[in-house]
Amino acid sequence: MAKRCNWCGTEEIYVDYHDKDTGVPVQVNHVGSMFTVFFSGGPVWDYATAKEADPGAYALFFHRLLRRGIYFPPSQFEAAFVSTAHSSDDIKKLGQAIHWALKGLPRGKPVPSGAAP
View 1 (cartoon, rainbow, N blue to C red):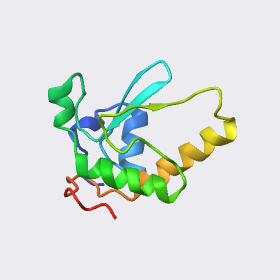
View 2 (view 1 turned 90 degrees about the vertical axis):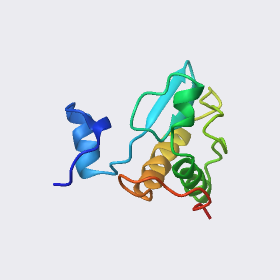
View 3 (view 1 turned 30 degrees about the vertical axis):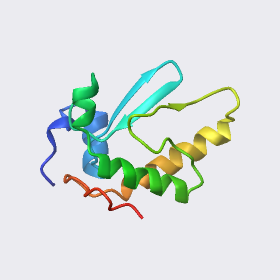
View 4 (view 1 turned 90 degrees about the horizontal axis):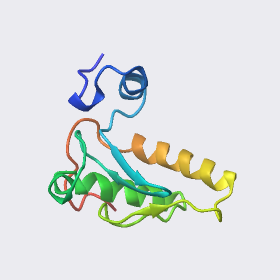
């Protein structure tokens, strides 16, 4: 078994995700239906901690989602929204695309800026 990142902790759902799935440290901040994804091993509370997130990983994630037809915000400093206009099939497609996009990110190391196609 690979050494776990610090963000994984001991909660079963995170251990399973880390060991058996993608193992990419990600934080999802949300308010209501608005959310933002940060590739960071620690919590993101403010602009200073947001700047510590991996912009190269976000760029690669963004471009991988585009390949699946998902138009996500192009910057980790912007928010995505879920609304009543999205069907349950849309949400399922989003979940599958996010899973696929995360699996394409390098495990446990920063992504160089400009690495996205």
